[in-house]
Image 1 (cartoon, one colour):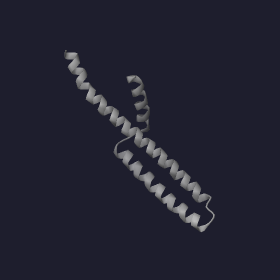
Image 2 (cartoon, helix red, strand yellow):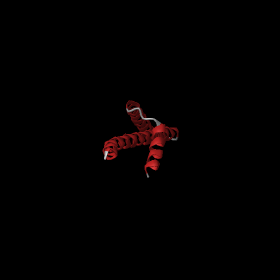
Image 3 (cartoon, one colour):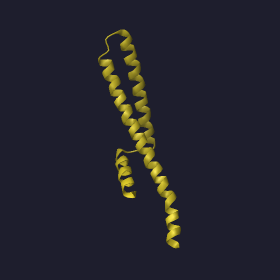
Image 4 (cartoon, one colour):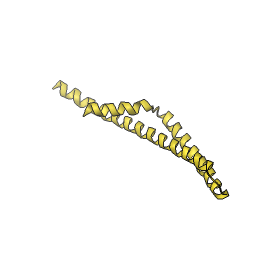
Amino acid sequence: MKWLSRLLQRMPKRREQEKILEAESEMIAEVRQAHMEWLCAQQRLDYALDWDQIDYAVYALEAAEKRYSMLLRQAKAMKAKAKSMNAAYYYTLRIQ
């Protein structure tokens, strides 16, 4: 019966670890998506021809830069690392 109590004590820790890994992987995915949006906004500015297109491209580029920097700060604050995404993947494989 002692083993059962130890197992039950470990279950909440495992769930907490899974939630942390899931939050980190979501944050990393958001940072990657924001980086791609920033690159697209840079390309949009490169190909803008009209004044209205240039204005829109500059606005979109500034917004994308701010979003990307905000997400980077959040990821650094939660100490998310790209390696943790791989760890989360292997962790879920090991559980199954």
